[in-house]
Image (tube, rainbow, N blue to C red; front, top):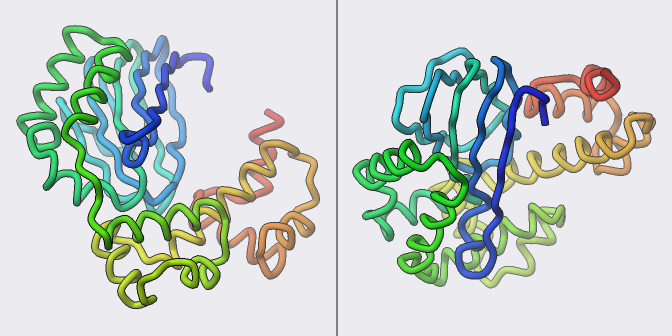
Length: 245
């Protein structure tokens, strides 16, 4: 967490936790930037006060629906900015928007943005989660197994092993994942493998990069560096220097 930014986060469990990773509320004492992690998922940003930019593009109030995260994105905020968000798990947004349209339709999101402006607290989003939980449906048979495959990739199961444990054919799963997330299972597996390497470096910045590459399933250090740079938009070496800084 950056010193200029106060961040509150709530992670739901139970039925709602199938769909929503977290809701959060942030307040910036000073202007600053931070990198939003790449996770293959979509989220909704609410601009409550001040200015926000994603990769240099200003976000228009009252809300912005993020595209599926294929790379890390730089979020910039002005001094005094207040903003909030809902972060879903990969492949959830499209099906949910059709199923819980009162909440995720533009009118519903605008209403939530107004509630956040009037009561800029994490509790406003926690109340939204309660309303969401009452409306969120059980996923269909195909979506259940789509989410199961993605969960296995998030848990770093090799893609071939993950396919073998799901009672749907590989082509069917590929189509479902791509239709719901705009990403392929292979790309999601790449995202979570590089996130694992990033976490290993965060836990131990002195880790030897060649050893880390092999431990995390990369062919060599050069492969690790290419994936780090493509998905996280930074090299492992620079990332380590930032950790020490």
